[in-house]
Length: 343
Image 1 (spheres, rainbow, N blue to C red):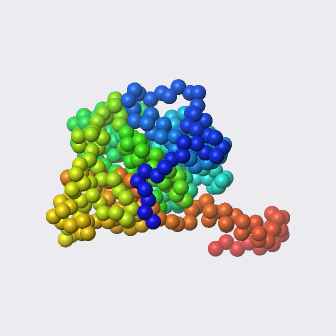
Image 2: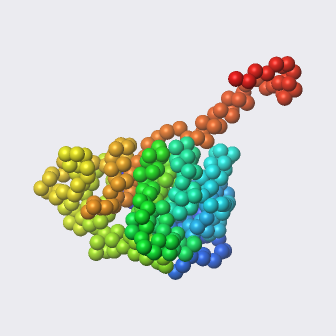
């Protein structure tokens, strides 16, 4: 099924909820110009379109600039501990599957101390929405390099340049078996809303990586993707079932060379029918896309992968119901069995 890049977002839900109902009375405390403001606004604008009562939402975060998010959402929420938000979100969803559980994390919180938890929530396919704000720096602790910082990054903890190879969040998510992987960036307002809506509608863990500018400690990290003079030639907007075309004149495309590697080609000279076609269900295509964004290749945004698989919370609930329907022995019955065999 083809999906519109920018599906219509209803301004209110049948109950009359608007963005204002999701905003708290707390002063939003991010640095001036921080990309988090835009992300917060788009989440608050999109949620009414889901027609879910506010009391059924839970926002959970770890530690970091992005993790202040629950304070600014007039829903239930928890500002939890460093890197452990996936475990808490899993517990909340498992205890009450009827809740809409959203997890907000950053590249440091989610991929450093929280890397192990990040991997397991994805492979389990818990039905939560996982938003990762990626600014490629530690902002809250004042500018150290993060797991996604590029090699050579000069920061307070790496004055001579980072020698760590960076983590690719989308590639890591795909390798962990994620059923929904998408990417967008903070200044692309319509795109954020569209991707958030797709993620919200997905049954299972919906991982959305959001490139987000940190104007204080890593300003202009994504400038080539956001500047009007360059973004058309550096960004590839994905559409399911359509060939990968980009550029100011829509004259550039993505094809595979004889080794299966992506290359940029001239659409007219190469032929549109020979371009790589995006397929959200094709893991190979998704993995290729996750590695793009360097060596002259554009950065893909949109849904890289979306497939169906049973969710952890659904399967756990089925096991609980099966156990409850079975023989009901008391603890005393077990003790009176007289003999225990441990294998």
